[in-house]
Image (cartoon, rainbow, N blue to C red; front, side, top):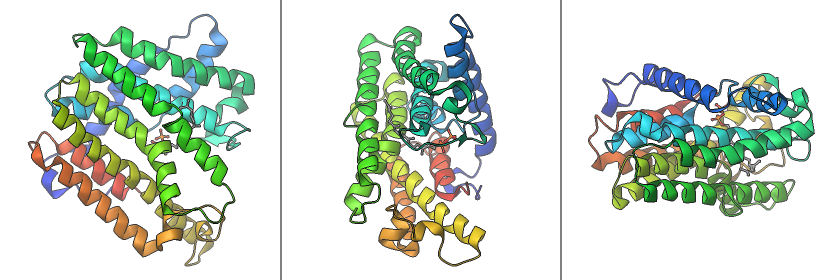
Length: 304
Ligand code: GRG
């Protein structure tokens, strides 16, 4: 982790993340008890409690707190973001999609429980996310809860994550994929759920429409940043592995930012997205915005 942002010098980001992630883990544990029928709940819990970084729930809580809300108010939405993230990973790993055997160093859900159970575990988490927001959000006017549910539905559907995934599948092996399609894929596969996390936290926290849209802009920048950094790491990591200057991702068929913009161009683009994200937060009290500023810094400088 790089040095903290100068605007957030007195903010201990690592202890903030650790603290919030442990609250999220406890809430997720309670949200999916090991009840009858045990097989499906075992499978849901296996992936949900498998130790992700919890970036999406923390973004949701941080946005809620930035606009004056409380962690408990955001927790049901924060958990729902992680349920959707988890279900998208379970389905993404299936043989009919990416066909991956390992996730976070452990066997993927279908490797452990079988494809039939993995599909159902993903479906059940998808459904539970909506139920959980509707049932567990407390002390928030109903119209705000409906607004969050609407955001989440839009985020997941055919013009959201599913749209991003299908464009990704259709672009496989297509050497003519340009920056516009690449940007569409990333904004929809990855960025849109980060956006939903931030916007949902702001909505339940009682933000004005103007602040909600400002925070949406912040989230879009960090969503793209997340992916640009991922692509840069793929190149630099595989260069290290190969002991060469050009990593495997520069020579594979897959469109990536370093391939389309050059490694230096992708680095400059990442810097620009990071600056854009910070700029969006400049209208807020900088001490209160410290967690979101530090999260942007974390995403821009992460090493894995
Ligand atoms: C949502 C109905 C529905 C279907 C999903 C499969 C699919 C459609 C979309 C794919 C979404 C996907 C797998 C996007 C990539 C997400 C991503 C960047 C994962 C890595 O996120 P981290 O680094 O992971 O936050 P951890 O392990 O820390 O949680």
